Length: 368
Image: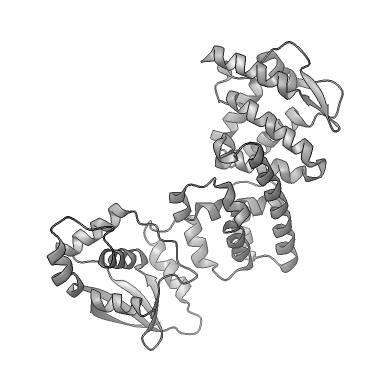
């Protein structure tokens, strides 16, 4: 790999950006993540004359560049110069007009990439030496051209996934929405697994066209059910917006897509009722709900915890006998009520939602 080191004034960097001769977001790059506070700190450093770390560019063609490292700094510099969003104070107009654009920064320009080398590996090496990149950002840099990443990114930006709105905006900036989709894809392909081991395997080995098509189709089918749940009550307003709860809900649907929309909708209504009592303290919660909560916070992404949470859902909702099972009796014991406590939903014997809702409300009011 050949490179040269130059000193550029900020006006030169901004010029190639404005002339669209600089690609700030090649496939291996992370999203824009710097908050205004960090951007303002950089501009203050420039104003104070403090040296700024080198920016790395790849010159793909003559005077046509790709940003390798320095995307966040460049975005902040451009934002300060072109808008008033991160102005430092009311008296920085002279600095902005007379000194800012002439400030010099070191620029390392990669001019030649040898056979067997790659800009993507260089980017990964530069960023993995510190704590800049989180896991999904690192994976994007390493496997930017893989089929699995393409599948995950397509799902992450899909309308049906984004309408759920369960990932906060700041987390999206660090690609944590994509991180969740990766794990859900692994769940679709492999079933419940331990932590992120199967995600890593999917990136390393990649997937074939058949597996990609199957995963895409199944994921869409599950999202269709979740979208329908939103019409009952927005998932983002329930505890099931949380990563471990959402993983469990997603897995429960995956395993039971054939039981019918009415049954799945009914079980979601029961979850909304029961979530009021989900807490890890067994002295102030039904045993099954306390155990579920415990497995959401202790080793929560282990295979054992994930399997246990799904098992609890199955015990509460998928009883195919004509009598309540032990888990259902635990709920009735903690939330007693007069009237018909259980009913038949399809082929399953489960809770009467009206009776359960009344019992839970009465008990929770007593508790708090």
